[in-house]
Length: 485
Ligand SMILES: Nc1ncnc2c1ncn2[C@@H]1O[C@H](COP(=O)(O)OP(=O)(O)OP(=O)(O)O)[C@@H](O)[C@H]1O
Ligand SMILES: [Mg+2]
Image (tube, rainbow, N blue to C red; front, side, top):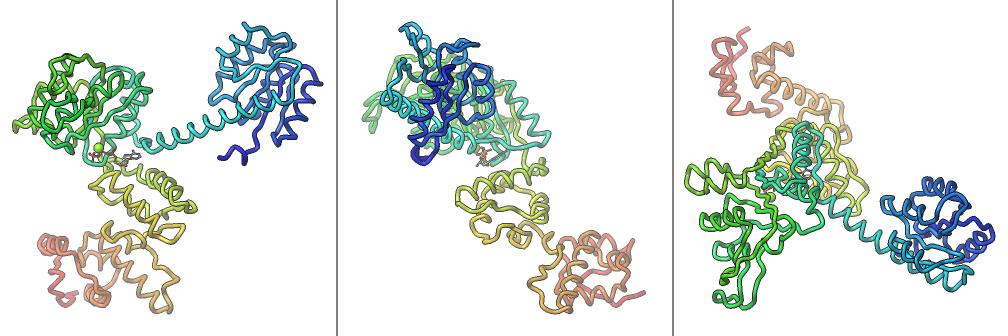
């Protein structure tokens, strides 16, 4: 937000009423919103009631509490306001102490209008920059938020929080698009290394001849094309975390070098004999079955054991379907905001269909679909009929859309068709059983199937035809025999 557009809130804490009054006058004239407190007790109350206060002008000498102590208290709050200290008998030592505690500036009485205004303006500029930075940080964090309430995800979170503070190497396994990268970022974000770098290396995307210098760096002239010294990812991650993504795709040769780093904590740039110590936490991920890769000679067993100190498994989306509405809502919020749309939603029926779909591409597939639908659907509520057909036949079983139907006859037919489809499905596409259940002759049901162009699914139909011939006296759905009853 532009600092000029926002009406900043300033709290004046001083026991002298005259000072409060004159500060109020000066600052309100400049367009700021003013609050005041005459002692520490009242100040705490106001700060509690208005957590959005941007700036505090704080007298160092208050009747009931030491101003410096109150400063310390204020600065302990999450996203605390800026504080300018005011003193009648200011000494240098106090100013130093106040600065240490996080005060922005120090004003001495008697107060001068110009000096006050300059200090206030600077403090609010600092406040503005900090809040802009907070916004960016929050947005980035939001982009990597690992959402889920399912017990499997709660469990995963528990494991993440347990291992995050340690230096243990972690191996994350799970199908493509399940959220392995998010897990790796979450571990880093909750570790003591959080303020250091998180360096990601996609082992599958880097050509074999480049991966070594990518990981360990190279010296100038180490090989043709090495025109400059390059720092490797391990060096860049020093003090932080390296995320070796798609480690199952790393060549055996590179695997042996990575093993060495894990064992010795040392690297060597390509073309250099110097050994460099690095302090790096390693998190690796793969969607391959590493045990199988080991059996087939494509992955080193010793590296596997080194990496697999803490194994984490991210379950596929189909094993935690109950989280689908939550994820859909979350992606809706993100993409509605990103595209400046009013917040869109999915209807309960649409969500129901989405929960039944097997999601081979897991959360990534779900996320991409939600994004596409938000952009392409011109409605606030996305309904079952707006979903792509491949999500399943279930969408046909819902009530027809009244707005699209003109006559009573059309409505009756549409409803009848959907009813028959629903019952057929519930009876595993067995026509005899369905006819009995809905209490109509089988011949009549066949007529209806023809009328509505309903074809029994080939696979299901065959299965029904062959297995039910004996028990149910069912004919092949394609033979459309006469009703024998
Ligand atoms: N639980 C979740 N909450 C929110 N977003 C998620 C979740 N899981 C995955 N995503 C999103 O889905 C996408 C895929 O996630 P991610 O890249 O972490 O998967 P992956 O397991 O690393 O996939 P791959 O094996 O293909 O590399 C990302 O855009 C991610 O933000
Ligand atoms: Mg990934």
